Length: 376
Image (cartoon, rainbow, N blue to C red; front, side, top):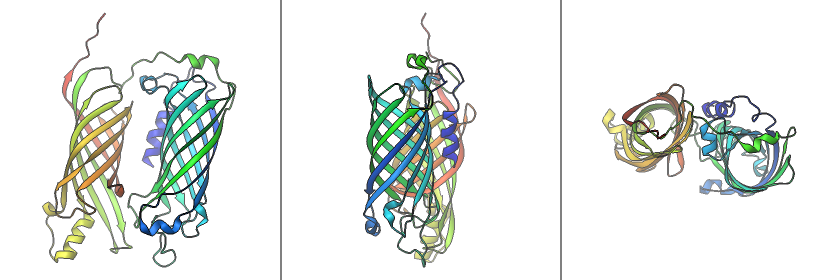
């Protein structure tokens, strides 16, 4: 998946040096929890869900400015496996995802962390209208995996740390294959982490970060972002067809800090399934204007050097077919491959229910700029 390559690129982007040696660690976590049933059809899967997670990660020590700004997070890759409560109709899940683990507080041997991971999952069972009609949660074998966890860590020795925490693991294909209610699994965790070799004692001193391309230096500007996304929605189980989705997003953003941008946006979305439903209901062929949804809302962007997470939320103000309702949310993963051009993957949803996952490219223009003033 695109999210794998973008997040993994952060993990390997650190230059080699004395502070990047001997900072690899391996972690094993046992997880135990339950399914958060957000649809009546998923109540049949209410049970305890055990899982195991295996992680390879490395510490960051300030080779880039963003590492220092986020309190030197850990970067790595996790593997996750579960029998999903032992239900035959939903089978087992195997996930692999890169992640960033942000320290929230540190005090001696004690620390609190927030872990964010996005990757790919393989589920051994999915919906089939004859052979597996009870599984409304998942419509395809391959899905997006997302992991959100908080944990407390206690360093026992220079090489070993134990942890406990709680969080959410989510599986969904973004309606590329329906039905797609998704699986939300809440679990508590206990784990142990150990360095693969004796840690470099100099790493605790960190490195004074320098500014690199794509990083914020304090200058003031407004940024116009124009991006596109294309997606496929397979609704063959309900409507007997597959439909294409074409979207364009425009955002005006203000950079308020090294980490954050705030702004507002306008969305234009053409969903082929909307045109189908209007024609089926009215018997008339709808015009392009009738099925092009226009949305307005606010935007927030969290920046990690070349990679960023853009969140949009708002409401549709035009377009006859609104699907699940007037309000929409969108999470976009962006990656700058030049100073002004970026690739993006957009997950669009209505009140938490995924509508599509689209891929596209975008361009940004600085419409107002004031150079940072340096004082000697």
